[in-house]
Image (tube, rainbow, N blue to C red; front, side, top):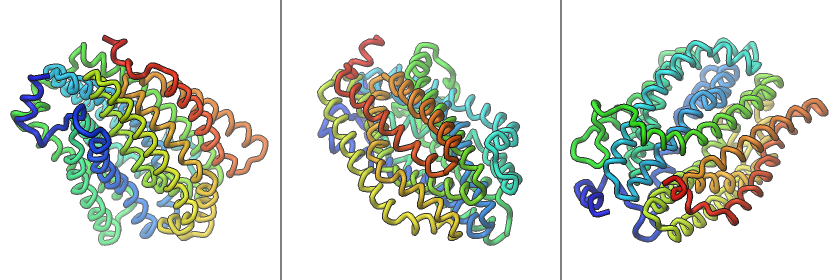
Length: 459
């Protein structure tokens, strides 16, 4: 541990050792910048939705807001796998192995570049196929195709920002990603207004604004990561796949990638059912997703802090400290989620009306909010225990739970109820039902499994 301590003293502002100090304070200090950065990241597509809805109307809004499920499906596998890189970096950082930290950083960069290029090709080429598969409303289809294709032209920037953020977060630095996102989010809103309000351009310009903004954040990240003399310094000549470390990244990250993909696939199937109810239902469902994305940012932030905290402390073999951090993260996330859910339940009409004041859109959106919001505590619990599992190198566990419950059970339920009733509210009910089932399973695993020795079994 002595070697890595010496390195940290050379650049103390760039990393944070979460194996020492008050665990609750450490997690809060990490989670707050992550929360703020997540807020600004959500502003990317939300700014598109708000401005597009105002200047281009409901069909254009539906094209933009319905993009979330397909975009998440396209990037979820790669980003989930990249999460394994963050776990590996945190583990070796906690253990004091500088060489392995460097290998993990450069392997993750190589993975990001390859993933971004592949996503660009697939996304641009197959956008019309994906949208047709999702039964996109014909009135919305032309603008949706344009938006998607421009968006995926910037897939490399989208992936590389998340890779860079993962590297910095794994080393305990959650502040710089916040600074870079503030810059890019402000730029995104400014470009949206310029392209749509001033120049009167179409829906594709909203995607272009997002791509330019994301590219700007990547440039800032790389300037920081390329600085000499830091523990994590990226050297272009060293960017490649190091077999031993990349094998760990895949082992820890592949289950998360599969998990994200199956959740995304289930959401796409749900979106397909929603699309059959028309443009207003599409706009409402997409708007709800935007609001829910914001609402869950505090929980997501604690989950990210928890995964890094668990990985570093289990790498340092501080098992009791890891348990304390896990319990604090889970309790905080559940309480926050329920408070947020109550607020959303009460103010759903006003929040949805910010995006689209069409009565039909508001009616659909309020119906969904009133169906799911009070059950956010269950969603938070499931995600929190999943974060603990990932941090402990047990990513296979949430993969199996999410695959079986959030994908298979959810899809079977929706197919059955749509055949029996054909009512949209029963689609919305799929979420709290599957959250509840997964929460029971996660509780049993968390209480009775030996998750704290997840890394030990891999040694």
